[in-house]
Image (cartoon, rainbow, N blue to C red; front, side):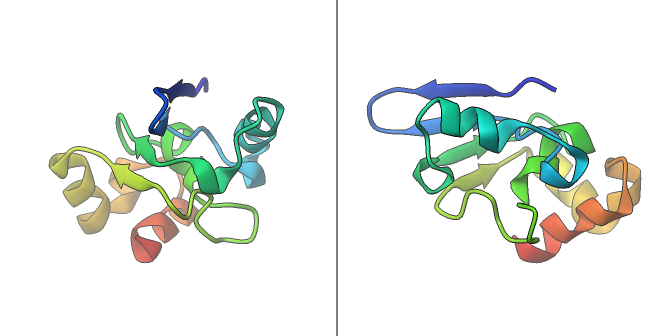
Length: 101
């Protein structure tokens, strides 16, 4: 899964967050190479709540990977994640995202 990084001088935005470190996602390492600290990310836009798009919202320790970011997705996707995360995502462990947020 590719993640798009957008910097506009005021904000640092990610489009999706990839798989995450527990599934060998490389976003955090890529951000480090780009000189972007996870705490500097201001916004994460989620296109849809599949594991390869939301898995990177949680770090290897189970905490928010981007603690200062606003995480946004459509209300329909959010509601689906709250009501039935197994139907909306590819693995049960990702339901932790909805418990943290």
